[in-house]
Image (cartoon, rainbow, N blue to C red; front, side):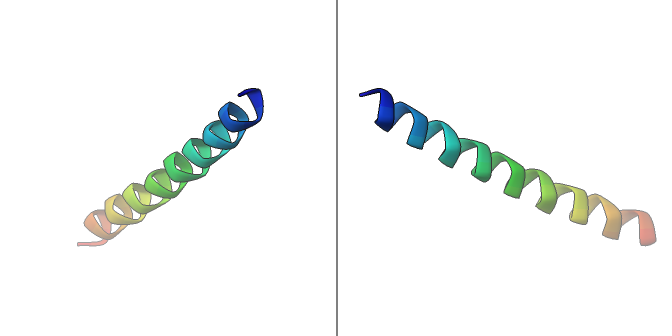
Length: 33
């Protein structure tokens, strides 16, 4: 159970950082406009 939770937490963390990177890129493109 604990192993599954840890795996899920790591997955969510990676997913969130990927979204954060994408949104920062989009904001960067908007600034260039």
